[in-house]
Length: 198
Image (cartoon, rainbow, N blue to C red; front, side, top):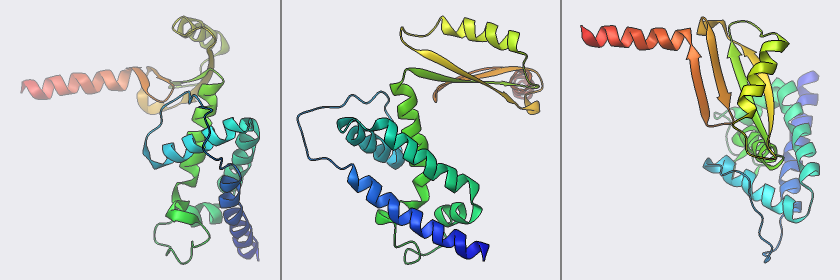
């Protein structure tokens, strides 16, 4: 019974997504929208188009809220998630989705979220460490990193634990910059030097 309910929920969700996208379609206008971030790939094109249309209609926050609701449903329900991401399901089964883009729904939502984060001037920073860092260390790191920001930007710092780095830190800034100060990367470089020398 639960899988039938999940399937009905998935069907309802999937029929509402194209309607949501079409409702933000706008006629060509002279008003240009400055997109805060250049995204690549098909999910980037879809997210950028949705951002532009929602920006023209001044509904960016509403669209973000709706997409977050959809993502929450996808994340919570494994049946829906598998339905969306399973490439073995035929197009006929997924016929409620247009253009065969159903499998990248989550990627489109994540790309749109990246655009919204950049639009607000937020710079996401993930600090990876062997164990959770205490608040004093996080504050000091945040203060050091804030010196590199442009005016109007704001750091959003999260700490992620990954024991495989063995020690040190890995700092991921935005989607495109990584500072790897981990022991594991230093060992890998040393190992490469030793094996290349032999």
